[in-house]
Image (cartoon, rainbow, N blue to C red; front, side, top):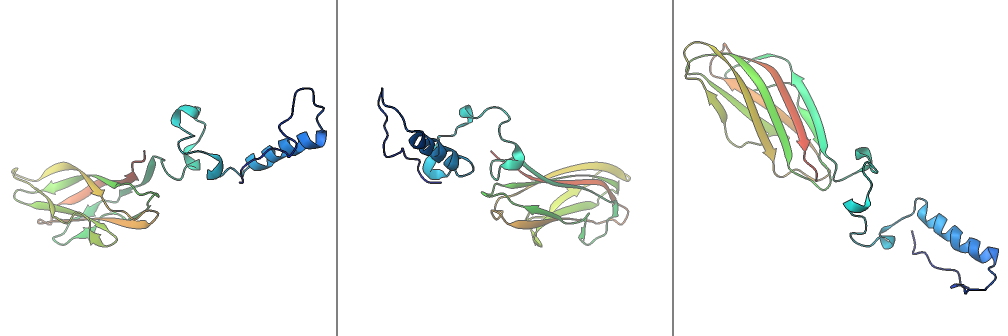
Length: 192
């Protein structure tokens, strides 16, 4: 969109008889420019502020940045844990916003058959590489098999703006009797 300018005969003076063609040229120029052609040249920095936008005037699906980018979620099937890391549920693919914000991965699950002295380990992979970088372990010091509920939050501090990342939850357990159930994985980017 170009800058809107007045007709060559403008400004008009009091008492002047206006030509319909001159007036039409001015008005048509405004219509043509504003109907789908507004560009940065026509809007000053900070000209459109929150206070100037009516509530619900812009819906989330029309925003490319600044949206509360709640993303993917899944509930994984129950899995019998082994001593080696194995994937829990399907890998979750997330498209990062532009500009990128931190990607937050929340994991909630139940583990049954958690025996005395055993250790449950979780890791989150981002594109096949451990995001956590450490062994996220939970031990059991209670007698007999117990059931526990785990909630974990992982934060990807360096997602690629506009890129696609695959996040994979993996788990292992030192005793063969444990089962991971009701595993929910939610991935989102908080937007501001």
